[in-house]
Length: 169
Image (cartoon, rainbow, N blue to C red):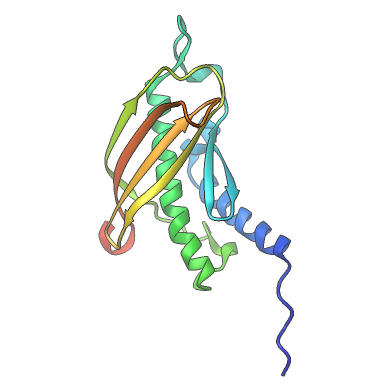
């Protein structure tokens, strides 16, 4: 019996992008802030498009610390969730079309420490998160945020999270 031809790469990419969009779209606060995610393979970059409502100090002007903190925390949680989903999709245990269909449980924040390195300017911001450790119950994530130059961070954070399922009971 001949093996079926491999699925076109574009179809796989569209399914994965759809899964990511459903994951992000399931959280109203992410939509409120306008945060988007750019996916290249399994790597995500969070994008916070500039809006006037994000300004905390109109004299400088600078991004509000709470908006910066929320952006970093969202980037960490989505990266952590996406890493789990990615592994399940790659192993064939999860159909990308089912993401978000049955009320996806997200990791819960245990603690989140932010270092404000310089004021966030009134322009788009970017962030990448790196999962340092992820187990069944607990995960540790580091996030870095920049604006014009990736080597000139304006904030960074480390968070610890309770994983859904066994750990979230």
